[in-house]
Image 1 (cartoon, rainbow, N blue to C red):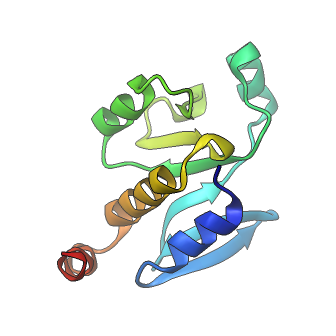
Image 2: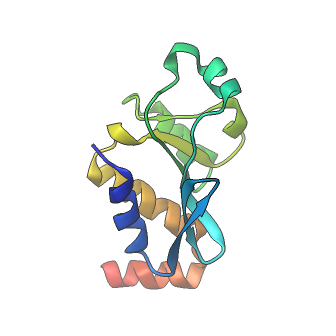
Length: 129
């Protein structure tokens, strides 16, 4: 089970990442681009999700494109979901407490790669090999 401390540790280990607090919610940025953040559901989203609305912490993450988002949503593990607010956005919502540390690391890193400058992302990937 992942926590905000796990998100912080993974995100801040990535190059040129900073943590910010906005409206008392955590956000992680690469340079000036937001890649993962804490965002509780809004009342309309809770209503739209009905009984499927989670009550625990929710991590929002950028994904490469809508196809990648659909693949995560189709996983069937009940970890990833979306709301009408994000239907047309390359953003996936995750039930943080259901994410394994390995899956969290992959989600955060992929979100960072989507938002990092191409040269920075390429350099990071080369160092990982």
